Image (cartoon, rainbow, N blue to C red; front, side, top):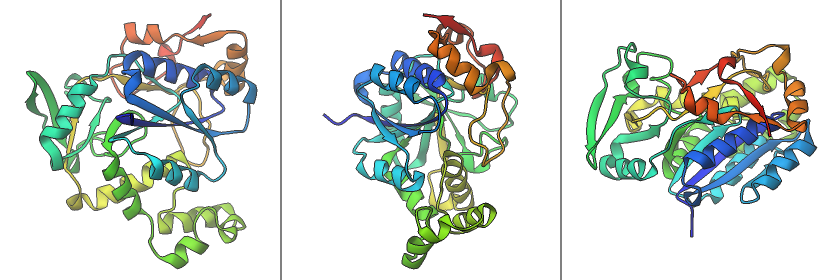
Length: 307
């Protein structure tokens, strides 16, 4: 049986946070409906990562060799109806009503870009976005027009944390983002020998020019930018109901793109890995009991418990 959802999650140097992501995901989402693919950037803490992978043997682990090729290879083999991307510092803290999500996609068909878990009406009260309501099976489902978004979040349709997309749509806009020029694909893709010898700034400029993403940050930002510039070719509505997941941003592992985070020397990847080795785990029950009010939160939600 093919899973309804392909969950593609990215991780680097955060085994403790990845374990929290997976445990919270499978607590809040029907396990039998999801197939998880872990894109693992192997750098530090291999032993602790192996412990996490052994805990979730049903997940398919891809040890990153060339991010661009690895992602395209996974997406090409996905047979699931939907794709849900994930990042290891995200925590799911409320139940995900997949039946309602699936029915929403079926009812609105070509008008839906995605169904996100990062909004609810309260979280958007001060956004100045127009929020409309639709009844699905007697429940209120909300939507906004992302092409007219008023905030950085509401005008940002493609993200890697907690939004469901039709697999066919992901394949379509990733294809459109990247150059289909055979010469460019051969000589200017991330895996080409020519690009690999270029200085870093020139390499990034070349890859951006042809839309060839090379990291989770560029996989998110470059296709999203293409969607924003080509909004007339895409479904305009982003649907949501409950805020169910949030990124707890306490440290940073990818330095190719500037990211904000709320941490200190007590929350570095080295310190947290030692905590993991000692048997500490992220207290996801605390997050569920003290639900974040937005798609990102800080160290106030980052509590550890000894198992």
